Length: 139
Image (tube, rainbow, N blue to C red; front, side, top):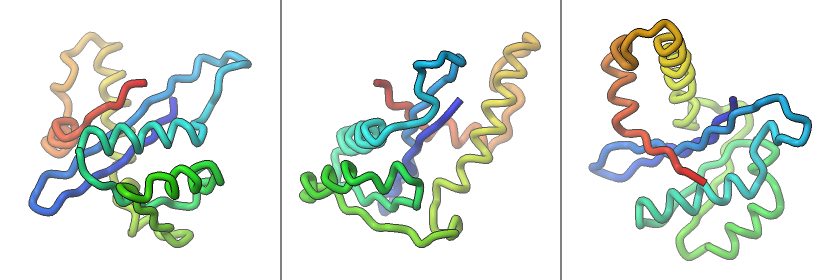
């Protein structure tokens, strides 16, 4: 499973998480990661949902540095600003703090579902609050 996500902050408001999940089934023709078009679509969905300009603080993932995304950003400069984070600076990227919580919550959810227990009953207050602010973008 792969996940791409955007953490959004608005002054005086609650943070929001927009994410896309991709399941791998082991097929040869199936993509295992996200293409630049997937990130473009996630940015557009975030912009439409928030109905506000977007500031994208991107890390150095090779897909984030694709020339097509740079062209997309330039074409949409009216509502999209891009800032490059320095290498090896996870403390500057708010999304880095979200991944461990999501991975643990998803693993617990899968385990609870497999064991037949009520989904969500095992979540901590932080994880429950994180789920309340999460929005999944569908393709």
